[in-house]
Length: 227
Ligand code: CA
Picture 1 (cartoon, rainbow, N blue to C red):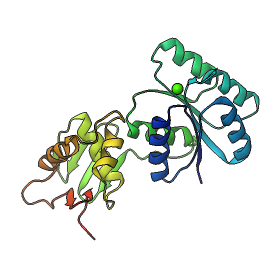
Picture 2 (picture 1 turned 135 degrees about the horizontal axis):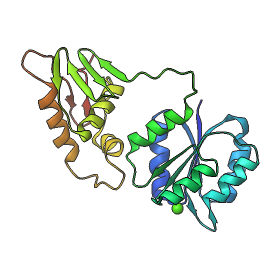
Picture 3 (picture 1 turned 30 degrees about the horizontal axis):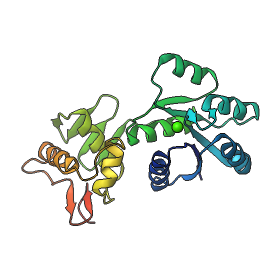
Picture 4 (picture 1 turned 90 degrees about the vertical axis):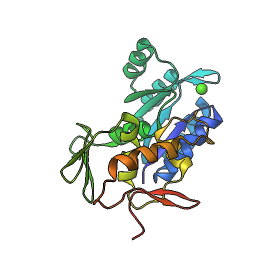
């Protein structure tokens, strides 16, 4: 069980993170200020896996909270999540004991990748190639093939394809896709997901190949057809 504490005073961002992380199987608790965060971390104790830390908290600064946590012997990775973009802020955060730093607005998939990286122990092997049937996606070189056929995608299409390939049997709703591939500020009534799914289908599906990315009426999309 991976327990994540989200320290965030903006209820919209806190709930966005909590829902998205819970959908990935993480156990999430939210603290909206320094006092709550300290009580929560004390309560969870040794089961704490990771902290996502906003810097601008009511009445205190996330950096001072980070020092308090480190002084109390909390060694779990801490990822700072903040709108502060300046290099000096990043340096101060990392020097205060943060494991990583991500700026708002962020794409949820990047957040998930940073969490996986922060939780990975040094001896764990990282597979950089996703394979689903005849489709290969090398995440390092961004090389994508169906069989021997090379496929060129844009960065947004890479992110969309990665999401489908990590969940090949799962029906992904438009809202899930929007939250995971676009950042949280995006208008949920936009048809951008359908547009990009269309681009991806045109590039992946050629005559003679098994069609990928199926529409599940009223529910969303799925990479592979019903089993
Ligand atoms: Ca804040």
